[in-house]
Image (cartoon, rainbow, N blue to C red):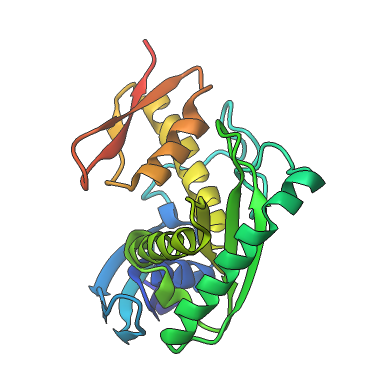
Length: 253
């Protein structure tokens, strides 16, 4: 194996290290073997005390089935912006009515980050989501090297979102639904999960055998279900108990 086909990458989380390595080696995830050398060590809401390390080995040609340029019934991949879950645009009257909520959420987020010793920029906006008439306050945190705020499987980010929502809602005197993001990570994650769903659907349809994905949080399982709900070849369902609940994809008979 040529040394150019093997690369090691380090980052705050294993997932971030894999993404970094894939970018450096210029390959897709299914074209490499991934070996986790060190899962790293971190404290909740603090910087990683030891970074995660992975080794990516490019597979030899012919070791995996060649990917068709245009898989059957696969929709073109669309670059998704942070408004990925947006179904309608909030009206100016609605935005005006929620200005206080946005201000409280932004102030709360900045205060929490300050107490954590983090310098960052916080942007907020209203965002309509599917199956809801109430807008969500979308909060995006921008700054240098903030990947540690995401954590393994978004655990840190989800915890930070929960705490921010509780504090902001208490200050406002009523519940404020929020979605917290770091450098648009959630938007990128949605694109990755949509691609995964389509790839698994192709495999299930071609082999006529079900496949189960690794355990995911509820919001990520929902993305898989939404992506496959109109697929005529397969259907998906969630199985198992939290925190090991996962999505299984079945061929349609």
